[in-house]
Image (cartoon, rainbow, N blue to C red):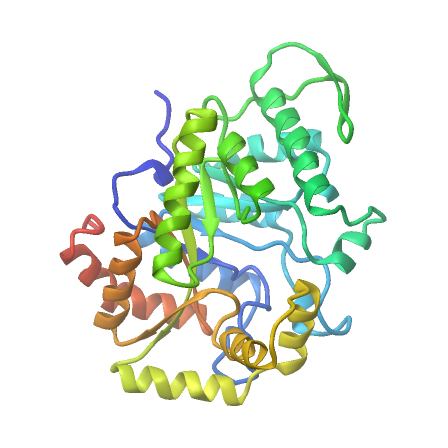
Length: 364
């Protein structure tokens, strides 16, 4: 029987935990921050798995945003990490994140299939075209412009899908990707292939997601804008490629016993933010912002990066998640300053409210 990836379950609001395979998820220099190591990352994954989260998602990072010893450069490679996590979990979809210009589709096809077998069909791949130029150039490959990044992604993903589905040798001659008598065995457990995700926000990126991916990863800058963007995304995928896609968002959680407690802790993070790290990220994102907008963005990064911030009591956070669901968000990837205690508090205090709201099935 074909396994059902948990990303395809019936929960109205799906949940994932994101970016705890490294030391760059928190942007504040405080003792409460997550201590990055294998044991702690496994603990977070196991907690999320036991609570029936749908997704366990690492981020891919090859170099720091500051100097060579800065914590932002410390991260586990995502395929080997995912294989180990898949062997220690039972319920959640385990993902890898791949910078596609640094990895040949033959290697990725085999790696993905291996983890899909380890997990029993619970794997998915987050495809990243690359935006951090020094990181991409470390591999001796050029940083492509937006059009070429997604032209490359189209060829790369086409090759990947053919390797997963075709039973005989085949040749492929593209502008970016060439295969000579290509093949890959064993095939993935999931048919026709594992779930794919991408955070394409540009028109080129949205076309790529609509054509190739199952999950779009979007920003939630304002609710009115988010409603319009999600509708446009889904309408385009249906009209152009006759495909249905899920839409997910990234959320940073700052949870307190009360809204006031959470606000005080957010102020504490802002006062102790890692400015070198934040400025290093913003410099690579090449944003042309006014001084006021740049200041506001630095504050946002201090509270959890470019993510949508969920700040407040358990009830306030659950209400905000319900609002995201109401505007069309199918799932959220969650992160915390301290992943271990953060996911534990969320599971204990917020999950029951989401279940009572009918957004998630109760955990047995």
